[in-house]
Length: 368
Picture 1 (cartoon, rainbow, N blue to C red):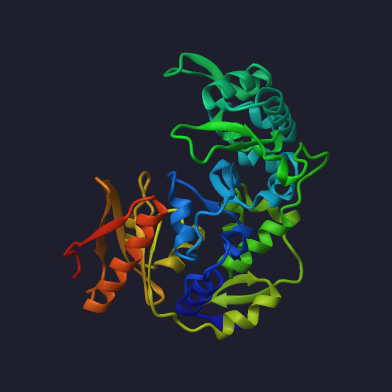
Picture 2: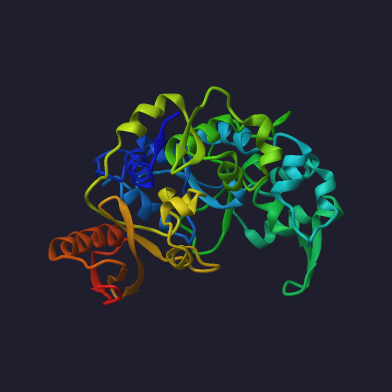
């Protein structure tokens, strides 16, 4: 059994995530679209694409995907994505929307997903605000899936199940809207509907292991928002087992040679907070420093990350100032003049992804 270190794993992931070189390609051709690109907060998915391709603004579909989080996906992939995200059992379904707000909801298992998806299909027949959709869906699902919301002063469905069932109900999101607007899924994707049986997450599991591996069943279960026990029946056979600094993990066998051959990649990227590279659940591999981990993954409002020569090397934040994007970088290591120039060049891609003509970079002293 091969043993690999953290640096090798990061190098492999940087290459498979196509962060080693920016290409002139349709974003639909990017490997990260096999898993989806998170768009939390709004606009960050296009910034993630801009870290990989100069053609970051091509059409894609925004849907509630893994864990009910907003992701960009290829429109043609949506029918298969429904089945990939659908629970594989009642236990899996209950684990995915477990919340104290609806303590009896988990007893419904997969029936909860089905009822919610069917309600979506009945309610969202054209552009619909999230509030209107919530009211319409809430009126159609079992009471066990709803709770009294004090701020809204209304009985409505838990968001834990609401967002995870939307795609199966034929719903996507308007990426251009300032507020959450739901739309029927683009007919160009092919038919999208409620699965007749259990889901099949094997394709997404394989994509996770290929892009963010080597990984454990626990890592993958966290990504799906379920438990290892619930996901275990869908765990693929025939995977290559390796150890990462002594910890057992798995990767598709066809990716093993690339992992073992991976060498640290030189260069700079400014990754948005929800970049696919940062979606790996083994955060101790991404940064073994617990203080740095807390700095990157916060309870609310994660910063972006500076990727430098194959490792995490700082954080950044940005705000719009007139017609420019003001980017503030807090490095963890001293930045030489060539690196600062590369950071400034990367900031221009962030600005372009936000529809702004230019960016201005400020580097905080921090550890520099």
